[in-house]
Amino acid sequence: MAARTEHSPPVGRPAAARRRGQPGTASPHRRRSRRLTAARRRGQSGTASLEMVMVVPVLVLLAVFVLWAGRVGRVRLVADLAAGEAATAAALCCEDGAGGAAAREVLVEDLLAARPSLEFLCVGGVRPGADPDTGSGPPEFVQERWLDFERAGAEADGMGVLVVRFTCESDGALVPLRGVLPTATIEGQASEVVISSSLHESPGG
Image 1 (cartoon, rainbow, N blue to C red):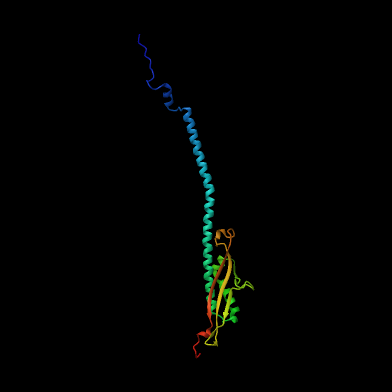
Image 2: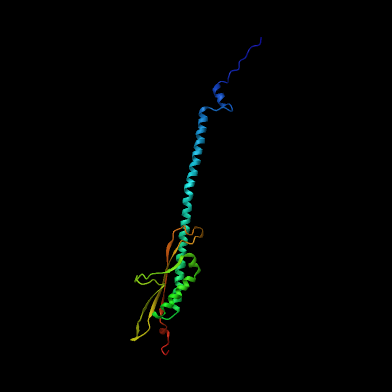
């Protein structure tokens, strides 16, 4: 009669440990850890998406504001250049003194209206600026100051200062956002000194 042999588990490794190590089986503790890890990952992903939704509009608004501020600064530069050109033209044309004031006013108004950049950048066109010294009277594009002076005891012609001043409203001329962004008041200003022509005549002239 053959002897019966019994297969006993290896020493040092309980049967429960072998069952835990078998493929397809997992302890309750390990399954709980996996569920917690997956939930934590889903929570982190949702938090990142929420932060992105909140940050993107702020970044877009910041970029639009920087672009708007740069465009408004460009409008100020163009306005000053246009005022300088108009002041030079007013100083070279027309009759010196108060007699040529009306002609100078019409000339400057026509020059500013004909400048394409101002027509595009200024909402509603340009308007004459008020004289900050007097603060009274109708606003004009050209403010004039004339004075007479004497030379060698005899009355001579004088000199004048022509100041071209105008204002306009500009939203930066951002075409896709025109009418949406706020407007800023832009002031263009320049001046020219005019010496009466008789001062340039020769003594025998």
